[in-house]
Image (tube, rainbow, N blue to C red; front, side, top):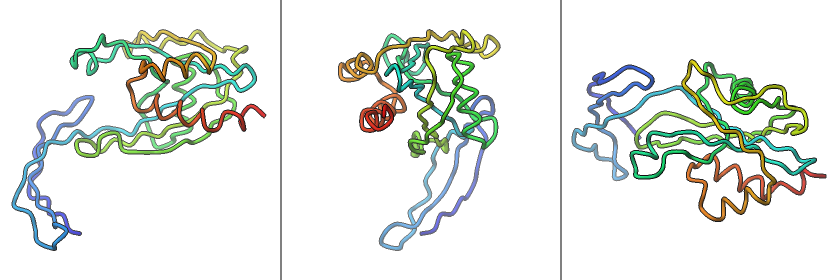
Length: 193
């Protein structure tokens, strides 16, 4: 399958890079499409981590303001898991750093869950999702995010059963949180042994 990029025009360069792209691509019948225009967001890859203590059966969730949820008519403060941009392609190191910054725990073991495009029709961002094993009785820092990044993060440790009840009630509205909780539900017994 063939793609022809005819022109790329910068529309904005900031936290995200917005471009207008004129292109054609090969259809499944072998013919090329007519010229089309798409707007795309380019950004760094990101990581998301569900901190979990298998000894106490505790997950660490967070709540913070998200402008997209607010503009969609939601309250804006999302119940979610730790997440952040990758400053390089060392996804495990970035995942561990984000857990310490946002919730204050040190990850003792990091388990990859999956890696996926967050919105491939619009963006090149790939999210790397992890489970981070922690000792919930040994917090290294208060967490809460970084002031220079304007983060104001509420840290919410809770039993796994309570977190799953909240997930079942539809309180999670971000894909990394939903996917991580589903993965943990499937692997929890093995992790606790």
